[in-house]
Amino acid sequence: MKARHLIFILGDQLSAGISSLEGADPKRDAVLMCEVMEEATYVRHHPKKIAFIFSAMRHFAEDLRQKGFTVDYQRLDAPGNTGSFTGELQRAITRFEPQTVRITEPGEWRVLQMIEAWAGILPCPVDILEDTRFLSSRSEFAAWAKNRQQLRMEFFYRDMRRKTGLLMRGDDPEGGRWNFDAENRKPASPDLFAPKRQGVAPDHITKEVLDLVGRRFKAHFGSLANFNFAVTATDADILLESFIADQLATFGERQDAMLSSDPFLSHSLLSFYINAGLLDPLDVCRRVETAYLAGNVPLNSAEGFIRQIIGWREYMRGVYWLKMPDYRDANFLDAERPLPDFYWTGETDMNCVHTVVSETRDNAYAHHIQRLMITGNFALLAGIRPQAVHEWYLEVYADAYEWVELPNVIGMSQFADGGFLGSKPYAAGGNYIHRMSDYCATCRYDVKKKTGEKACPFNALYWDFLDRNSGKLKRNQRLGPVYAAWSKMTEAQRNDYRHSAAAFLAKLDSAVSTY
Ligand code: FAD
Ligand code: DLZ
Ligand code: SF4
Image (cartoon, rainbow, N blue to C red; front, side, top):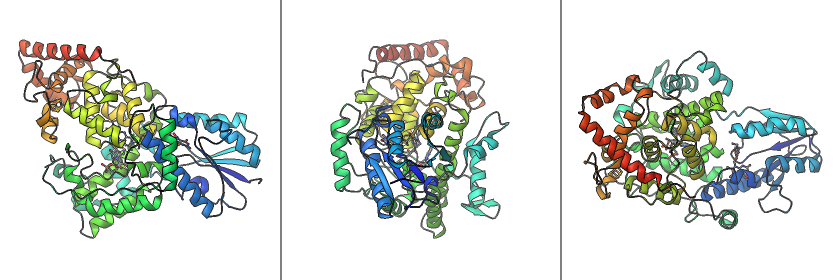
């Protein structure tokens, strides 16, 4: 078949309404989708992430065929698969001889560079279309950010509320406030009834993919066992409904809590589907708003949830495109330590880190506060090189694409951008973890002890981090009270912290990542 447009759909563009399909004619246009080694191995993604994307891609291709489209779908193990987007596109062009290639702008800067280079090597023009699944386009965000020394999510978020009308009463926010976090952030109580999470049993397409991924990506970190992700928009929608019915009401108050017996608490587990295109972010928010308006969930939960999506998620994407490619190399605190081996093995006496790494290995998922305040916080305090931390996060989570992962790691978690994205480093000692989780109760370390062999390592590392970086952080207004507390300590106390941290870090340095 000769095609008018060859529409190239990438693995995270699985939305029926994707801009590249707008106005497409099944009789005249053809679709290209391909599983390629380059994408699966540019970092060593968790096998569950690869299986999720491949299976969701195969299901999406079937849906398009049902709609009458000719879909050129190249499986990873198809004979002649060149292993790269560029190679597969070139092969498809010889088959379809299209007048133009159409593609929606990719999520990652790396892939945009690749696409922009196609103009010089392909025999036909390439139309790159805006990704309209985001509320704020790249240029709108750049206009918002222009002339601001520091960006703050809260102000961006208010504009998104006004733009969408979500939880608005005329010009005013529902409930008279923009943000109800004061009512959130409660520690989890283990006796709280938690409805069982729904999952989706693998169908024959997913089983075939699991077999392929199990064979080809054995060396990657992570378990494929108990794969229960949705891989179609219909099933993702069922999971969304179940979240709204069962977990949303307690989302706000349990948002920052961590519990050994429950890796998911009241989190939605929807990021995989939103990021790959199976769920539309604005539609998700409208359905959450409807649940609130019907009186089924409290405002603090509905507002908190909607803020994560139209606030944080959009803000992260805006910062990514504003700051790339330099953002990837940012290292404001000059942190140079390699990633410890236990990020891959989970073998550490720190029960909090052990729990989060183990859950990550099993589920390709950890919730926000685990990512920020356990693995992220540890890396920040220990001075791990931000780029090593970034790569770990990109590999291990099934919702990780650089546009959302990188600003969360480089900006929010590691403060490697010096405070461009957030106002202070998310650094905390053991007390915070003790307050928000039950991890410390069964830990070999004593969270109440400040220094010495038995003391929780987060305690000395916290003060050592502030001390080590005081030249760069001391003037940060939000850290004023902690630096005041540090200076009130005796020199002997301060030295105790310094020596304790040094002894711990020396041990860490002798056990560098071998993965
Ligand atoms: P919920 O807690 O139910 O939140 C609802 C939705 O809000 C999420 O599905 C997500 O779409 C959105 N959201 C919440 N927080 C953020 C945020 N900070 N940035 C962007 N969107 C947000 N999120 C990713 O999607 N991909 C990543 O690779 C990723 N890496 C992260 C790395 C670090 C160090 C940190 C601190 C956070 C990261 N996040 C990432 C944000 C957040 O942790 C995940 O979106 C969330 O844990 C996904 O689980 P959930 O769907 O159950 O979220
Ligand atoms: C993450 C991923 C993986 C593992 N494999 C593929 C693939 O084989 N084919 C594909 O089209 N997309 C894949 N993806 C998603 C892409 O990496 C993603 O679309 C780009 O990074 C742009 O955001
Ligand atoms: Fe983590 Fe320290 Fe608590 Fe152990 S005592 S679980 S290391 S915070």
